[in-house]
Length: 240
Length: 164
Image 1 (spheres, each protein chain N blue to C red):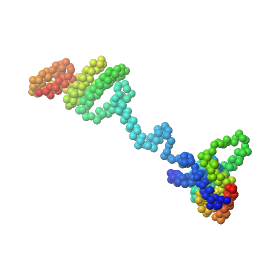
Image 2: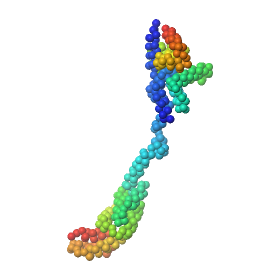
Image 3: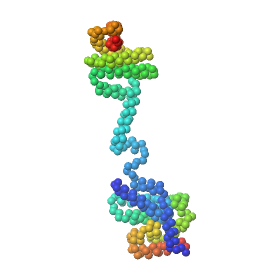
Image 4: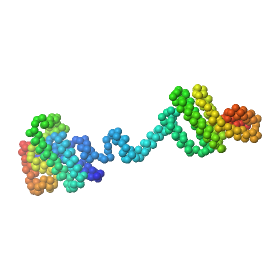
């Protein structure tokens, strides 16, 4: 016969009956859902509430991240590409912060960029992009000529550096068989500066070598090749 | 609301094991015990969040659990007289708790406890398993301490008889 103490001991063994731990936590989460917890789903992650309400900082950072990524990709785009207008807008934006005297140089650098794009297109044989690239090049020439005409005291050395680069890229494009169209507008825009620099040199005392280069410069001027004239004039001022 | 959730979360953690065990000892099925236990806490939470004042959460939860067990057996009794087509087919495989119980001394005690009348079951569970003092058990049963002691004595005697 079991004593009372033994019986109570047997009863207390029933304490071993316990619910399954997983079930306990699952039931708790169902009865008392954590308001900050949401199950993973596409909508939970990309819902407007999450991005614009609950996590504005994260949303801002992400949006800027995406824009930055697009910006970087756009810098390598070519005329005719989907992202090319972004590249152009960026360039226009950069030009806003440039002083009036620096604008001709910046525009000439853009002419060079357009030529580089044109060369890349020609080299990779992307025929469909050729026409928009030539259009972009012509537009950049017009704008550079306009800025050169409007400039009173541009830095001639910087302009000559850009002009030299343009000549190299033009020759490269011609070698690749690209017909770029007329570039007279830009050449004509160099004219007043070329003329002024020739006069300056004539009024200075020159060495024999300088005289020789000045002579060449005048010949180019007579031919209407004002960019080469400018290159020669600067060359003359640099030699002794 | 967040504060209420926090308070009830503590109540849940504190009493889930006891309430589950209480129900399991009466229904002897893990699945049914889980269903009734989660329903107990769900009703408790609904009442709590609606602002009902709950002075003794343990007594409150046990009251819900007792009512649910009573309802369960009432429904079970009804299903015995309905057409066989509508009787749910029970899963013959034992649950985890049932497997632990089967073939052990625990099963013998559990079976004996299960066939006692409800008041005897409750007084034994609350006093010897939950370690509630007689005063608290008396309050939960709506009796005096004296009659609760007598009830406990009779319950033990009845259990011993079932075991022999």
